Length: 209
Image (tube, rainbow, N blue to C red; front, top):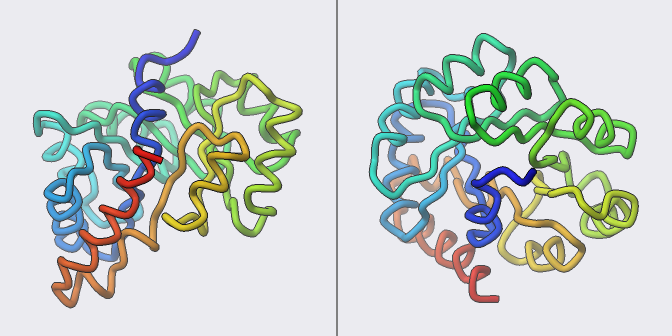
């Protein structure tokens, strides 16, 4: 059965992956992206004190907030308690998937090879994050995987930006994750709001593509 969040993620086409060295920079990124019109945010647990930010953003009306780089079951539980509605990992951890499903969240484990994807699906993945996408072969890799797993929901992440995202979508991705190409920490630290929001608008343009 398809998770109820997947249609929303498909419509958005882009999930911004927020990964910064401080919570303040991440909070600034969230505010700027939201102001630019983005309503989905993946806040990674590599950010110091990420949980309070997840809790704050999850409480905002109209925002769909998830947690990224969830390291283990304990962290998964904490993310759900903070209000995360999808849990993302760069690898496949059946315990994290089980906690996501038990809590009604969308489970999005990472995988790269057919064997890893099969394991993720067997463990109950709702979405498979193809990571790292660019170094694995880019859109061509996604197209090849789609032939083997025609029913799977793929979200390529890693080296994806607004320019190559259409190629991933054409290759069979349901939506994509964009991190550093969208949430550029150096520009955030420099206060370059215009650049961040310009990148966000380019990504949002994929919704009309």
